Length: 111
Image (cartoon, rainbow, N blue to C red):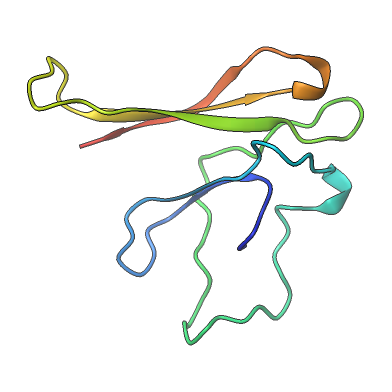
């Protein structure tokens, strides 16, 4: 984990309720680079463990040439006067190398 070019949703960690990595927005990454693999012997900087990934969120898709899709997020903030109670964030992926459509892959409300 750290400087990654992929999409990750983390379980709560050290008081952070929602940790997200939306890092696949610009630099292409090959599946062969194994960006979702665990780093061997990481520097934990005094912590007892690394944050863990949420099991219910999928990895980015891979196109026929072996490149991971790009992804992005759209955050909708609700004002106190809004008819909607919560803000929301939606995460999308797309095969930008082949000009593919945006595909909703995950979304969540933010109270």
